[in-house]
Amino acid sequence: MADELAYVMITPYSLHKSRTGGIIGRLLSLTRLDLVGVHMYAPGDKWVDGYLDLLKRSDFDNPVRLQFIQYVNENLRRSNPLGLSNRCLVLLFKGENALNHLMDDVVGHASPKVEGHTVRGTYGDFQHTPDGQVKYFEPAVICGPDPATTREELEFFARTAATNGGIVESAVHFLPTAKNVQTELVILKPENFEKRSRRPGNIIDVFARTGLFIVGAKLLSMSVAQGEAFYAPLLDVFRDKLQFLIENTMRKRLAGAFDFGVPDAFYRAANRMLADLNAETEFARIVQYMTGVDPRKVKSEAERNRPGPVRCLALLYRGEDAIEKIRRWQGATNPDKAEAGTVRSDFGRDLMRNAAHASDSAASAERERKVIGMWSTEPEPEFKRTLDAFLAKP
Image (cartoon, helix red, strand yellow):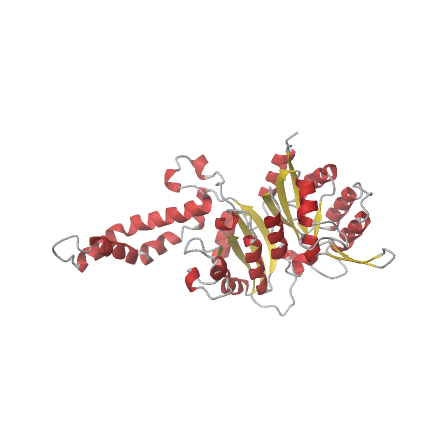
């Protein structure tokens, strides 16, 4: 059976209630599908009208289809009954029998009898009167209802990815008294996606303790060119800060190697001679880890700019003192020294595989966002290219 492409849209209410991490954790750990795209929308009324037109063509044998139509009409608009930001987060999943598998085994059906281990069983609310009338309906996520409608919806998402989504900083409003409102970049590193697990969702759940708003999301496969540009400032850091490692290694290896003591001047001179080589080696290691490609083996410009084989998830968080709040919950670079309960304490493995990157200043956030294409909404987002490539297949 050929692969299908399916989507899951996390609703504005779920995002507002900081259920995002829990939902993503369920989706990634319960599904056997591949996560192939992530994009945020903050749609205008015209977008909602277009989406509703597609929903209204779908399977009306489904007893809750009318509830979904009413829900979208009321809650995905910028002016909505709860007065919430209408941010939605769309995730794309690819694999065999993707639609049915997602609905039956992962998301769950919109019903009071839905099983508790599913996304809707935990995060959705469906209250009915004894005669079957709906009192309260919160589906937690929205999915494509059938193959034909889903394909039309995906085509619609592709057409509107740049005009109604991307970086949606303006979709979140703050009180006039709010001070130092910032947007912080967080990248969940490749080790979180090495196998199917709840890790990415659990990390997002820790960052939810900041009370900040997610205003951008991107499934990122860094190229070597991006990796080198992103980590360029570390070359000087490695050159200046890691010379002690050169000396420690030489002292250990040379201990007892001669019938005479090696003078300290030798180690100082060797440090200076090897500092650049050591920095370049450490730099290549981190670029290789974040891209899946050894930059020292890249032979052409085309190779340097080709997306690497490993994945990261980039997120933008916005709110007061966002940088300080995110870095506090991120924890120290060394997981062994990170405060208990922080991301790196709970999920880090070592200095490089420490679960998540977060920009250390507003200037760094701007520079890094520009490198990975998250400074402003791209004219043709990666999410759209992913959709277009799949939809082009017969």
